Structure formats: structure tokens, C-alpha cells
Length: 397
Image (cartoon, rainbow, N blue to C red; front, side, top):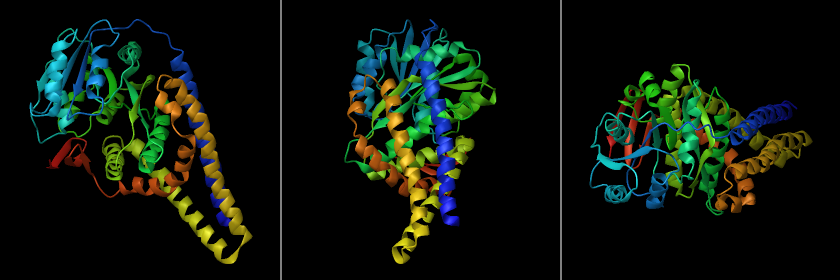
């Protein structure tokens, strides 16, 4: 009986917390989707650090250069002229109808290469710039992407704005399905002012706020740009504002090793730069690990003794998966509203997504708990050891 009550309690508590979080997310998206343009379009500098050529690189960069925004400049930054992206960026900049240029940042062993590129680009920002926008080269930007991202900065309490990634995985790629599911649940946090965080693929901040929060100083010896910016902004009592219209659909298909590396990197970066959010993930992982152990134990006992109490325990525990199926159905409707122009998501297999839920319960708790054991990450072929938010070691490159 205690096992039945334990599994039932987890289901009830998880259902309550998920319902609360999802209602908050739904209301938030409703409110933001109804928000009308406010005409706040200060001169902006868009900074795009690059390493290598992502799928659709030229198309993505061109969409950025063609944004429907009154006045802005684009600064591309690479580590070296030998980078495959350099030649492409020089050509695209020369053909651009607006101000665009490429800077070569070099390498600094004290910080992540992406941040080194960004800091170099910041030195080239024009005097008239009022807003800094940071994006990644795999972002597929709608034509009002820049306007949507900048407009909430008009509110005095908003420190920075952010979009978020939305991975779309193919039917047969199970590891990618798990990453996609994990990433979407994390997106629920973005509607909570207490836990919302900036995503480096699409974030904007007023130049004066960037200076006041000391973001450049936070980046000086860091491995992460977005979470360190998040903590710097929140330290001066400003908020991170999620913009649903800047949710970016990305190709989620990758090899198993790459996805494990990606998941490990996200967790360890959060551990070092945003421990409050990482702590929530660890608590959830521990509870889910206990749930899984209890389910396996109940299943083994029932298989051996046909104990009806164990069968009841299995039903109590399995009801959690049923609850998550229901949330998956409702969440799909929400994401379809936000990603209305993305036909790939509309075609994404519902059956495969459902099947990923029980697999996620078996795998993700252990992946999350592994972050307790190490502070070492890999990022685009470079291995980093994160000693602290202000101390990063490059182990190999």
C-alpha cells in the first residue's frame, strides 16, 4: 500500500504543478500574441557570432539582413579568416542593402569562442546604437522578428527580451525526439517571471542596460552568454521578457553522441550560471528517478507474485504518463498557434511524440543527474572546464 500511495502522490503533485505551469504559459502566450506593435524602433546593432556553416546558413543570414525594421546594422564575427563562414559573410555583407560588416576576433583562452566573437563585435558598435541584439546563425527569422524582439524593451521593467528554440525531429530519430520533448517542457519556464531566462540564439537588450548590468565584464572569462546575461540583468532587478513570436523552429535531427553532448552542455551551463533553475531540474530528476525505480520494483513483484496491490501501484504510476499525453495534446495546439507558418511542425508525428514520453522517463532523469558529477562541456569541437561563472578553462580545441 505505501508504494501505491507514493506513486499516486507523485502523479497528483505532478499533475497539479504541470497544470499550473501550463495555464500560466497559455495565458502568457495569449497576452503576447494579442500585443499590438508599439512603434518602438530605436537604432539597433545585430551581432551574429559564427563558426562553420550551419544548414541553411546563407538563407538564414539573408533573412536577417532583410528584416522589416527601420534602421539597424549587422556585425558578423568569426575567430579567423580560415573559418568556412568568413568568405560567405564577406560576400553577403558586400551585397547587403544595409550596413553590414565582418570582424575577425581571434582566439582568447580565457573565454568561450562565441563570447570572444561577441566581445570583439561590441567594440565595433556605432555610437548611435541604442539596442543590442544577439542572434545565432541557425535562426530562421520571420520578417518582423527584429521588431517583435525589440518592442518590449520600451517597458522600464524589462531588462532584456528573448526568443527560444523549438526543435523539430523526424519520426525515426528517437534521441532527437527526446531532446525535442525535453526542450519544449523547458520552454514552459519562460512564462514564469521568476525563472525566465535569455536564450543566446535571439536576445535583445538596451545598450544602457547592458552597460549598467556589467554584462561585458560578466562575459570576460565566461563560457556562456545568455545565462550570464540573465543573472546580470536580474541582479539589477529587471526582468527577462519572453517573446513567443520569436520562437524559432530548428532542425532537431542529430546523432546520439551530439544530442548527449548538447543536453549535458545545457545542464552544466545552467548549473554554473543559473543554479536556481538547475536546482529545480535536479529536484524533478530525483523525483522521476524514484518514480522509475518504484515502477520497476512494482512491476517485478507483480510479475513474480501477481500481487494485486502491486498492480494497483503500477496503475497509479502509469497514470502520470497518461496525464503527460493529455498535456502533449493541448501543448501542440498552443505551439501550432505560435509556429503557424512552420509547416514542418504541423506535419510532425503525434504518435512518435507520444511514444517519446515513456522513453523520456527512462532516460532523462539520469542524464540530468549526471550534471552533478562534472563541470566539463564540449561546444563546437572545443572542450571547456567551467570552474565558476568567472573562470573558464579551455581543455582542448
